[in-house]
Length: 623
Image (cartoon, rainbow, N blue to C red; front, side, top):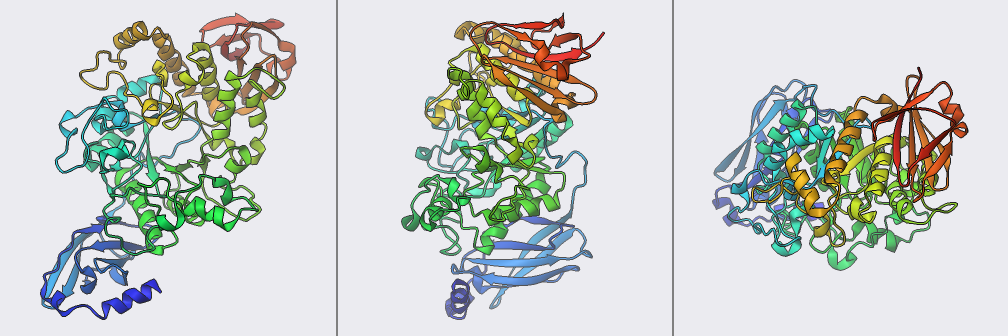
């Protein structure tokens, strides 16, 4: 009915419109490429009464396949077919109305085949998550942009602080030396929202084809990726297809009433994503989950609208081909219509087979998390095509296990029981695992600023199955909890007037003196383990064999045909003596060990003394 209404409306265009010159304010995407599996590209054309103009194309190998009108006369959607015979060049799209003609130049390009693009990420990587606004200010000249709605106020934890992409570029060497192999940062799309919304986080996009000018430019983003790739670092882009910001340019002048869900009708989401796979869920609760707005300043997109669906899919393909990113982290993955998310994942991975996507599936348990990973034998027949999921159940078990009293199913045993459910995951080794992120209290705060517990947490994350992801500042024992802004403090030294620069050894020593925390040791410890891990296929892909925890001590092994690593996590506040005979099935033939944390080499005896709250990562060997 909506399309029919739009078609009828075009028949009754006021005569005076034909006396007006044609003006086009924007065309999205701005260009396309030859050689995609899907030969069609849908152009969103926006301009005053543009629907009254008739487009035409005359370019070898390119045909105008379809023109789709919508309710709003300021939009028309033009679909071009680019066949195999088309060559790179500029396609002139002529828009005619009465005696007026407007020519829009639309470039089609050859795809980039460089081997250092679109590499994907996997369990051989260690991902460093940062928030551009809170990491480093590399270009103070763009802190305040005339005409944009928010400037910088570092005294307000919920305001912009001025970090930018140049700040990330300037510190890629730091990440490389730390042992990171990939960097994921929260969204860099334009978020031109009023100050009261605290959109520094990037999750309220106002333009999905443009880097926020307070972060830099599209060209700055390309520079960052090129430099990262040149250093052997991968780049993961954060995307959101569930919602945009209220000040997004197309929200201010909606193409159609079904472009977004109606806030007055559905309200905000109930955050109960279990309704998506719950066989007993009511229609009311399901609709509240997928149609409700995340918050009132983030309009919820309706991906059932085919124009919205195509717009979002093409936006993803555009960024991947344009930038060369290696992976995507999809925010709020269970909140949009799951059929759309499956189609999106499949299209992306069909076009970029080496790519990887991790969906943020913030679910309460293993079954509801495993549901979202491709290959899960769901009773409802759903296939997500999503390779990686965020492992929140493992995070919850880790933090609870380090903070509660031991028991049959409590304390460090939580990790054992959670991992024992890995049979539900089609590929648990592709789960992204973490001791914290931008939505969670910092791990050092969570464990009560106990350095030994911190080391237990990170030793586990860096040696168990899955793809480890750390949060900026974990390496220098940053603290923070409670409101979001306090979980996202500025990295010390990211601003020229910071009194301490923790990017440098001298600054870390000064930070240690100021806080009383063992900052230098923590940084050295993480650097040592992360760099050691880089060439350890036994950690990346080796088998995991674990033993039932005793006395709050968890022991597991990573092993393959070439190597065996023993990991000991003593979460007990007392020393423990392990009977190594219990682990003989994996230790036979070895007579010495080297603990990479303490850098201590020792002979293996009948028992192993483990200090209170000690973590050990032991390379087993024989003489």
